[in-house]
Image 1 (cartoon, one colour):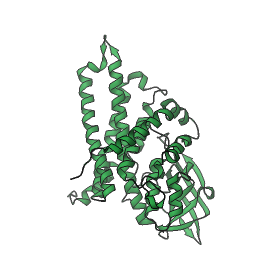
Image 2 (cartoon, helix red, strand yellow):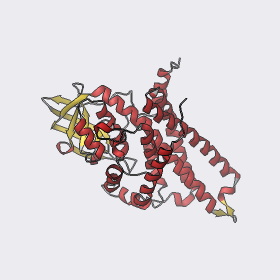
Image 3 (cartoon, helix red, strand yellow):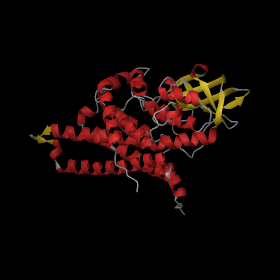
Image 4 (cartoon, rainbow, N blue to C red):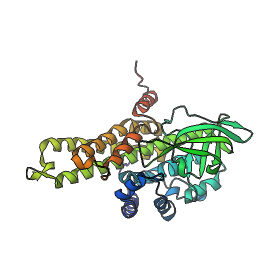
Length: 358
């Protein structure tokens, strides 16, 4: 029987990551970075990837990684979601790493990503669902031509994993391409257009299985990030409503607000079950497609609802730029279309369990 409870090791990992984020990822700093052209916190990334070895959680030990599972990676993403940390963990340590794991003979590049010496990014639009159609570039005599849009965290990537029209997945150095920032709602996870003008690339495997595997893992573990975000929104809103007074009593004591918070708590609890099930299924390989689809069919609405409630129930202060709640709402809205919308995952789930609409 599957045990979705957190193990002692997972709780210890959570505590370590939370302590690091408390010291190095304060809300004021994240907001300040969001106002610049370089929102990524590479010093925090170095502490996570190099100092704690978290970039290589999914990489086997004999290939330079930690040999952990998706369950441990999910715990890290919960904490990163709670802090809206501007680091390329989901896109680099999860999605790009999973794509490389599907390619045989890429031990050196995989080890570089696992150690944090390089940051990888899969050059597929952030909106692409695991079973969706992804855009490719043209391959010609070992060079790539074309452009790909909405590539998340391309601005800080050292190497791009690029699907081409010949069916291959190519590794391309970031110095060989042009990265043009695009307007993104989520200020902490920027997207960009990547242009390939005869960029030299090295074929490392077949694009189809690698991209499918990477996007499935990205979608499944995105639910853990959404869980962390929703938990922060609920916790901070409850704390604020206990402190804020109106008519000489705490605002949280009003019955109407209690009902709203109780409903939100139930949604977050259900989201935790769905996210944990997806992480466990990815770790064991049992019913992973179904569990990922279930998680992403449910998670987006809960994360957005939690962030919206936080914004509204914080009153006037919640509407200010100085308060971090707007970062969470933007992240939740952006995540709701990342790796496929909830509707796309419901359609995929209907196919998987043979419950298609008439």
